[in-house]
Length: 430
Image 1 (cartoon, one colour):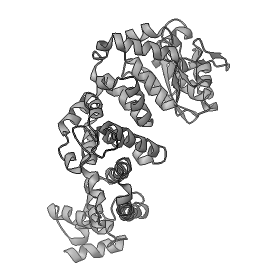
Image 2 (tube, rainbow, N blue to C red):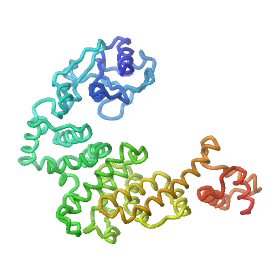
Image 3 (cartoon, rainbow, N blue to C red):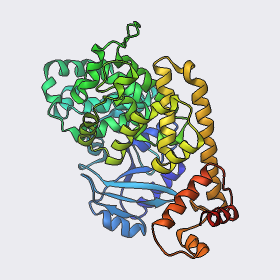
């Protein structure tokens, strides 16, 4: 936390007034170390501030230019103050818990009672709920996102006002551009996907951004459990959420959560055969409109199609080929997804031994590839293409690529475990 105050002091030493604001102050008030210091400065000339600081650069992208840099080993971003005072600036923020500022002397500016709301775990807007929601209905989704991520409750009056607005002005939700929906949805899914979608459902706003998901409520699971396919999606998201805090690879992979959200879209039963009829175009259309990168969209579709293969014994050779084709993270995410689906749909016990064996086989393949990096100071192969050509006295061509691909397979399956063994393997292939 002291790093944040060091940054504030350093910026104020240039002769401008500055305040720590936003998520930085909210996290400090919650006893959490911020990843980045966010500041508001009383200057319209960010370039001059950067020059006086002797560090940082102005990022003019987006609606509000920001001075970004690093001080005392911590990154910071500083924005020009909106309005004539810090109180005016804080009034431009949506939520009371984000509308708190800290001065250079340690004093706190809290015009909307944000500290009180943090202590009481309450999400509340910074002003009249009705007017703020009418100005921008997407504030509803933002409130739900913060409530889900921070495990807080919506202030009772705000909840009442939101529900009344949705009853009388539902058409306003349809006016929100898809890319804005997507931006908030993706933020909501990254930390607490189950809690976020559950809150969206409780406020009945899912039909506004993903109607086909809401339609799954009308499709029974076919197992006489009284549950719908929508219930299975929620259970899957709950299991996915439980893994996000313990697995860094899946926590940083948007495709993992999106596969859980879209995995049942276009299906009509839990029958595995129905999954082959999944409407990939529907997934692509939604995620494209949400401005999700095309690579992530492809990963989502691949996970949904690929995870079923883990319910059959998978050899190290097959895992090796998959890792080389799709990359390590994609295969590992798909295996985790398979476990979540098996638990969500009640057949985990039937496949637990197979899934455990497959996990073991995949770990062996990944361990061997990791050993290459350790032995070669970060390289992905024992030998480069040029070294292969020199070793075998070859000219550039397709054959060199084929040999490198074959060498990768030999490494992943344990046939080659050193540079010397790689050279011997190559000579045997000539």
